[in-house]
Image 1 (tube, protein in one colour):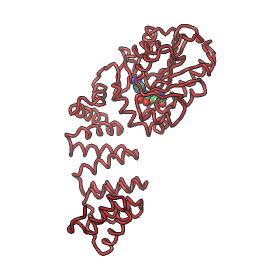
Image 2 (cartoon, protein in one colour):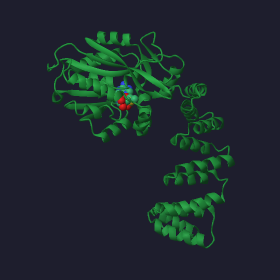
Image 3 (cartoon, protein in one colour):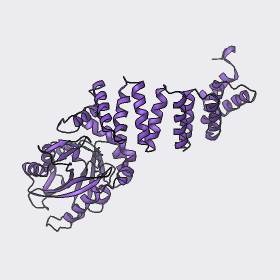
Image 4 (cartoon, protein in one colour):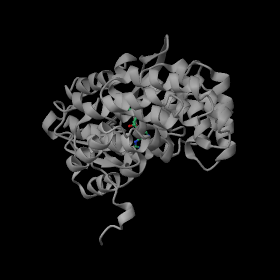
Amino acid sequence: MAPSPHDDSPQERARRHLDGGTPAEAVSLLRAMVDAGDTRITVVHDLIRAHLAAGDQPAALTLMQRLATAVPDRADIQLQFAGLLHHDGRVDDALAVCVAAARRCPDDVDVWRSIDRRASQTGRHRMAFDACRRVCALAPREVASWRRLGITARRARENAVADEAIDRWYELDPTDPTAAHLHAAHHGGRPDRADPRYVAALFDSYADGFDEHLGKLGYRTPEAVAALVARLLDGADGAGAGAGAVIAADLGCGTGQVGVHLRALVGHLVGVDLSAGMLAKAHQRGCYDRLEQAELTEFLVQHPATFRLLTSADTLNYIGDLHPVFVAAATALLPGGHLVFSLEAGEREPDDGYRLEPSGRYAHSPEWTRRALATAGFAEVSVEGSVLRREGDVDVAGLLFVARLPGTGNSPG
Ligand SMILES: C[S@@+](CC[C@H](N)C(=O)[O-])C[C@H]1O[C@@H](n2cnc3c(N)ncnc32)[C@H](O)[C@@H]1O
């Protein structure tokens, strides 16, 4: 359809080029307008878009900087400028632009949200927390405001504020599995297990930074679990079957930190996890023969008499009542098969077998766990204390279990 005369200005023609995938033509039309002295915001803005569409990021950034300087009170332009700086790798500069925008536009909630996001990404926990407080003041009816405050307050060690934020989040959306789980954790609740939707959402959001973050915390559980497995498969306890013969599953495999050690120790290795994000990382690591997105108890039930070895590092602490897991593990293991796993011990031993901690993870009592293993049919159980990682300046105390089903290690099933 031919354009009507009144919408055939150079700017309209440039926009049609932009929509039609010919950005170079849009750049020349808009550039001519700007060079002729037309510095209306919409024109400059279209030229920035055209430069970006044409792949000329430096030209877009230069122009955006000029525009942002010209209109310091336009929060939307400042945020776009910050976005371009961020895209250019100038993460600190992007944050500085947002902070300056917040001074000029203190009631603009998007500016404070952007500060939260950028400060969180660069590890400035206190700044992110302060920004979230402001967001909550400006947008108190929005669930996301309280969710972010809960998270950033915890990181800034403002635990009282975190608890309050989680309460508000839960009040606004009691159906949210994360809010429900954390609310229970802060109020002494004792659900049997963390909702799988909470676990999947948590680790999906965590997958990209998981290895780096855990590295900083001195995470050593995967090596400890692998060392126990190596000892078993060595045959020192008479249960060795030879690496090639061992079919194993790593339950809650995450990004593959255990798998990378197990690879040389077993013949066939399956990784199981709820989180698609974590599984994608494990896939990149390439240490599993097969990866499956599944809840680990359900996976075990569906694979009777299949495995000689099951491992689970830093995962069963998302489940309180371990009886169903142990029964399912006994079903999935071959006679003589082993289950090697870690649990958290908690600062003090749980009175009643297990306790949901404010962290959202469970601590277990070693004696209760032993009894649960015995009830499920495991005959030999050893447990040793271990430091799993550090949190802040504190060691997280753990328990490393090796449990064996009765029967000979070489029986096929
Ligand atoms: C802290 S990460 C540990 C990952 C890995 N084992 C390691 O040591 O690096 C816990 C993992 O267990 C998974 N997970 C937790 N509960 C699970 C369940 N019930 N079924 C399957 N995966 C689960 C999470 O998605 C997450 O990837």
